[in-house]
Structures are given as structure tokens and as C-alpha cells.
Length: 447
Image (cartoon, rainbow, N blue to C red):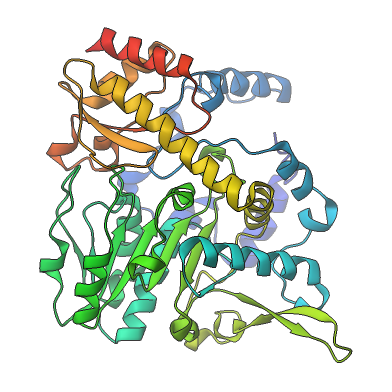
């Protein structure tokens, strides 16, 4: 537990300095209806540190960790094996203590691995240039929409119904004030007719593949239709391991790729920190958000690295910034770079094939259970089942049997009635045949 050394006198000095009478004044913008009084909680007035530590540890023990048993959750965050070498290397002091290179000339090591990272991301996505990362996949998607709005000088962004709802909500929050956001209808297990929505006012079309239900999308016809109207295609990838097996978004005509890199080098970590990947065509480079590391030579001809185009960020040119989310996820980026380097091209492709094989085997077993229907005809390591009952209570029942069965679609899209009976299931290389048998057995019992 963190030790909080501030006394009431210390707090009083700080409150006086910032010009407010008491702590409650700091929360005056919070609606009173949203404030829960302390008296509503059955808590003792005082406890010793040891007692508090024991009480909180007891509460934490009620959680079921991802590694505690069969685990099949995905929907944008995936459980993969991270080699112990990754954790060992990122904890070396020269990496762990360094952060954003505001003085790049003395941060050559940091800039070098960022340069390597950019190269990896460009190769994975099939694009010509990538930045030094953003915060996560959802904010990278929102940045892509705003970039497209700047490039096309249009405001309308069309979001596929298969885009992860959290990503769509982030786009609406971050980019909603700069143009109209149109969300296509949700069509689980099939592709909506997003081409019909593209018009002369469209800045970009945002399509996720594999989508939130696991469906692999063909981006080519969408890219062609968007380009015919002068719009851009933004491809979103929440499971970066899929690019070890599937054709890259760049090869399918995408103009911008926004992705989540958590699957490589980074554990689930209760939701973060993660690492956003962002890549685009070289001709759009000047409007790309975030930092870009470049390679150069010094006066003696020695190779070196520099930050390029960072002058468009908010800490230098605020009124002309291309992004308010200007930093990169440094340590997570390093973990990604190390893990992918350890895998190599062949190892990454083998990992992808193993993921697909695991998911295919599990889908065959579960869809053979009476009442369980597979609704995603083409998937990578994640698929969706339609069950005869609401999925959310079934997931709770399966958790009581020691199986974390997946993500009920209704949790992601509570206002979509068609999502109630849908269960999104992910199977990575960490799942075993014993896990599959436990899932199959438990699902038969609760249906």
C-alpha cells in the first residue's frame, strides 16, 4: 500500500494556495446526484496498516486471475505468453528509468529501439511509415479519424458496425466535435453494407478486421469505394497477432492503420497500460500524429537517431498540433519490440498459425453442442457463438465452475437486443486441450 504522509495542516496549506476553502470545493463540478456520501459505506473510522492490508488482500482474493484456469476472454485484450526474457530486459535500468526523449541527442538507445519498433509496425501493417506509438488502439483510431478529416477537409466519418464499441465511443468523444460520426448497423457474423453509406462528404471509413465478433473482413472493395469518393480507409486491428497469418491492411488498400499492440510483449495487466500502433502512407506523413524517429549520420559519418516532425506536437506548437495525445507508450513499446525480435518473422507466423488452429479446434467442439451456433464463418483466434439463453448469466455460471468462458456481447453493446445471446470467445496459444474439455463440459451442463 502507498504511504500518504500529508497531515491536515499540509492539506490546508495546499488548499489555501490554490484558492479553495475545502476539499469538497474540488468536486463542485460533479453533479450532486453522482456523489455517494461516505456514510453510505459500512467502514470503520480507523484501522491500522496491517488490518487494512489484510482486509484489502481478502477482497482481492475474490478475483479470478487469467492464469488461474481455463480462460477464453478476448474482445480487444488477449492473453498470450510473454517470454521471461522480455520482462528481464525492460527492467534494465537504462530502459526502465528513461521516458519520452525530450532531449533526443542524449537518448540514442531509446531512439534506436523506437526506430526498430516503427520498422516492425510498418512491416506488419503493410504501410510505408509508422510513428513511435500512441497510448492504445482506441485513441489511435480516434487520431486516425481526425487525421483523415484534416487530409480530406471533410468531417463525416463512417464507423463499421463491427468496430469494437469502446473504440467507437472513443472516436465519438475525441473526434465527434470535428465532424459527424455515423455508426453503421451491427450485423454479428456478417459484413454490413458499409459501401452504401459512403458519399461525397465522407472523410473516412473505419473498418476493423477481424472485427469485434471475430469476423475477418475483406477490405479491398471498401477501400476502392472509399477512394472513388475521395475518402480514406482506416483499418483497425485489435489482435495484432492476426497479421502473422492474414494479408496486411496496407496490401488491401488501407490508407491508415490503427492497432492495439498489447498482444506482443504486454500482459493483460487489468486493462493497461497498452500500446497503440499507428501507420500510414508516406504521402500522408505530415499529418500523422505523434512522434517519428528517424535515422541519420553525424559529422563523422556515424549512424545516429533523431526525432523528426515532433514540432507539430502540443508541447511545442499547440495551435498547430496534430495531436493532444502526443506521447508514446515507451516501456510497452520496448516490450513489444523485444518480444517481436525474439519471435522473428518465422516465429511470429508460427504463433499466428497456432492461434488459429487452437480457435478452430475449440469452435468445432463448442458449436457441436446442441443449442450453440457458430455465427462467424471466417475468423482468426476469436469467434462468436449464439446461445439459446442470455450469455451474461451463462458466463457467470461457467465462472462458478472455474471456466472464464469469454465476453458476453451484451456487455460491450448493452443497447443491442440482438447481442443478448451472443458470446465472444477467444482461444490463443495459451489454451490447452484440458481447457477446451473443461469449457465444453461446463457449457453442456449450463445449457
